[in-house]
Length: 139
Ligand SMILES: [Zn+2]
Ligand SMILES: [Zn+2]
Image (cartoon, rainbow, N blue to C red; front, side):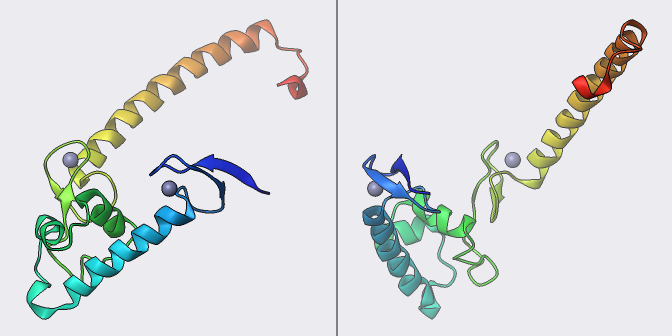
């Protein structure tokens, strides 16, 4: 189905497929990717950091990070391609958050889930008493 969307980069309206950017911006990004990739392919640039790539190619850091996230630039090949965790200043090479922050978040989620389970369990007991003969398919 054809779905119209606003490009997240330039805001122009386009027929969305699996991308959230328009064909023009996609072409731009591909060109940027080629610039970054050509730069990194040179042996002396293998150890370049994202900041150094930005300086050399003028491709914005955020875009290079996007390429790393999309795994188009592999940290195994280019070990210096790390960026800051969304939550703290730890350097990461995949995803949005570092392992520490992910653990923290999982813990918080667990606590929230536990609370929720207790609450639904308590509510369930009350409900069972009140609506013991209620039709279950109504749920
Ligand atoms: Zn666009
Ligand atoms: Zn973190």
